[in-house]
Amino acid sequence: METVAEYNRIKEQLMKREQGVLVDALLTLALESPSALMMVKGLISSSEERVALFRRNIERITGQSRGNYLSGNQIFDILRRSLDLLDPEHLDPKLGLELMEAFYSADSWAFESTNTLDFDFECLFSDDACSLFSEFAVRCPDIEYAREVQKRLLAVDGYGVRGTLEEIAL
Image (cartoon, rainbow, N blue to C red; front, side, top):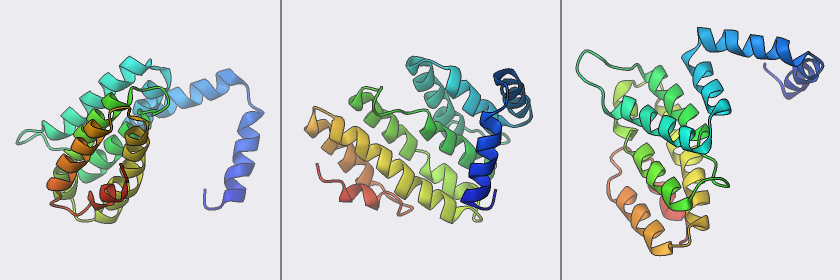
């Protein structure tokens, strides 16, 4: 979809379709695309399952071994879909901050996986992840804990994508 108008037109048409037809189409996409499958699993999972899926996704990236590397595109999809699993309104803020710290631990794997996605990874870490981190941080009743996580993340910023975290006033 190239325009908002086209997006809105397609959305309007899909809203008129039967639920079963849409479910079948979504499951077909999930069978063809790991990214779509991850989205479907996120949609049907409980909060606890979403956290477990998030942890497995990050471990899948950071626990890679020689000969079993994920491509830059795969890492990007996994990271992007992983952020979608975290809902600040339904997740304990301390847990959310812990998960965001784990998310940022994957930045070296992301940037070292490819040079063609540097801009995409930068936006993902500097914008999307920072925004989510901020939502958890401001909701956290233990401001000192939030500050400590923020400091730890800022202390190691080899790829220059954590600096936006400094702008979050805690």
